Image (cartoon, rainbow, N blue to C red; front, side):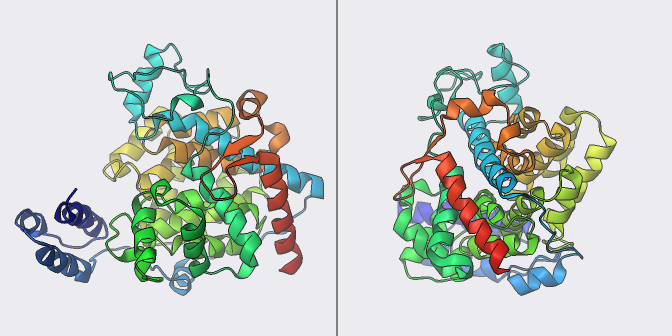
Length: 433
C-alpha cells in the first residue's frame, strides 16, 4: 500500500469517527476523493481534527473531567472475603476470561446471522460449547488462520490472543511499577513487550506514534480514527482483578492504561469494565454490579446511555434474541469493533445469562461482532462473581491450566500462576489503601 493510500484510508475512517462524535463532516468525503498528494491529505486531516462536535453528550477524555461528570457512587465497597475466597475469585476471572475468549475466537468478526447459520449447519445450535471444527463456514469462506486450535475438537490450551495478552501485560506493569504506574509506563511496556504486528487498530496507531516520539495525549489521537473502538475495553481486566471492591481505583488504573490509545467512549469502556470486575468481588447481583460500574463513567455519555438501554431492555424484553435486535437497531451502525455495540453485547450476555456461566458467554459470543473480546469480558466478570470453583468443568478443563501469549517473557503460562501473582497485587492494594 502506498503512503497516500494509507493516509486516505485513515482519512476515510476519520470522517466516520468525527461524524460519530457529532461533527458536521459535510463535503469531506467529496474532498477526500480528490486528494492527490500527502500535503493535501495532511491539510484535510487538520481541518477534520479542528471540527467541534455539536452533541448533547458530555464526553471528556481527562480523568478530572470524567470524574466531574460521573454520577454519585460508593467509589469503594467493603470487601468481606477470606484469603481463600479472594484467591478463588481472581482465578475465576482469569479462567472465565480465557474460556470466553477461546469460545469467540473462531468466529471473530462474524455477524450474528452468520454464526447462527454456521451452528445450524453443524447441528450445534443453540451454542452450548466451543465451536465445532470446519475449514469452511456457512458462507463458504475459509476460516482465518489460527482459529481451528480453539474449536472443540482441537482445543488444548488458551491460544494466544490480544484479549489475553493485555491482561498479562497489566500484571507485568503492576509488578514492575506498582500502583503509581503512569500512561507513559504503559506505552513503554508496549514497546518493550509487545510485537507491533500483535497489536491492532487504535493500539497499532498509538504504537506507531510512540515509536515516532509522540507522548500522551498526542499518541492517542494523532492519525488514530480508531480511538473509540474496543481496544481499550479489552485491557480492563488486570486492573479490576487487582482492586477488589475498589471501583474508583480500578477505573483510575484503567484510565491510565486507556489514555495511551483512546479517548471518550474508548476510555469509558475500559473504565466501566474494570469497575465492573472490581464490583463483582463484592456483589452477586448482576444489575447492581453494572450500576456500580456505571458510576465511574460520565453520566451524559453515549456509553452511559447504552448501559441504561441494556438495563431497561433486559427488564422489558424477556427474550435475548429480541433484545439483541434492539441493540442492533440502535448500535449496529457502529463498526464491528467499536466500543459501544460490543459493550452492549457483553451486558446482554450478563443480564440474560442470569449468572449461568455457559449461557452468559454463549449469548455474548452469539451476538456477533468482536466475539472473542465479548466472550472474554463477559466470562471475566462472571468468573470473578462465581469464583473458579463454580465454573463448569466442561469449559475450563480443555484449557489445561495453560495460556499462550505474545507478551515478551510470558510465551506459555500456567493460568493458576498468573492468578496467584495477581492475588499478591490485590493484597497490596488492600493493605496500602
